[in-house]
Length: 460
Image (cartoon, rainbow, N blue to C red):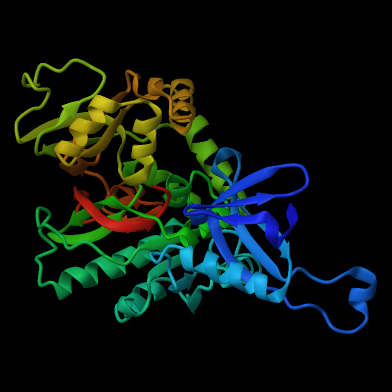
């Protein structure tokens, strides 16, 4: 939609633009203005037949349903002097915290393999309208971005943008966070080490197969919505989970860490790449509905204080917390996962977990879910309820949810003497980290939460 008005119909106030046409008066908040640009009048005889182009174009953000944002235009006509004066005044009011230069990392083969096209045709024009300069780097191979981040100077840009999915984001934050800890001289392989936060903010243009972080940040996976959040420059700090195995830091995570059911899904999906994009629907459906559940035993240790959710626990103290660490022998487990960052924050907010969320923040905790053997229909019901952010998703007999500061898992094969080369042993040494498979040592890993380690471009 394009609104055409005269320059005298535009009134600039402290925090908004008031624009009047013949029928209505509308307001645009200054923080939602993308940019103002003079538009030259075309030469030749075209203006005689088609009229002159507007001297000034004001591009702004329009916020629609389902958190979707679009870029709209106001065309302002008037004398060149009037339009130049209005442009100068509006651009002076745009917030200084907005990014002026971005380091942009593109994964060209992720998702539908259209990241380069999305950037050039959709994202780049928006950044140009906002007077943002981009230093663009394109990934040439797996883990290439990790290598780039080892030497990339983050002080020369105002922010970083990932054009890809959760896997590409994982490469960026692993490279950046690991480098930051080395430069600070920290023993980052120690789970309880207080890590140095990143100051440079990060944005995501969701073009990957998995875009869970972007959905948590922006409310959807629309690429224009994501770009407009980055342009506005508002940021929030987010917690990060870290995985440790074999006495070393193995990876960071912004969404979900899972074994059993969760690593099985990723493992079998990757083995059916001949199905192309259909594998992301066919393989999970086959595993959940037709394949026998692969159960395993595990030793689970919960660190720091923990709170058992939605069920009574005789192990709890009067304040709802237990001793510093507790070890459980879990039999017949189908899967274990922990969810952190924006995903669980969105769940807690939607469910109105005010008391629980406040308690979680005080003890620096996150959510751990242990899945016992489950019927297929009850599990599918749970899955869809979880995706709908329903409180009833956690009220299942097969689900043991905890709020934890950290935890350790030692996976044990169900057979007494399994074949070391068997598929079961191989899968038991794999961990799903934000949709990527990670090798762990001897089926053992540890996860800890680190508060406000990253800054993301998102709504406040």
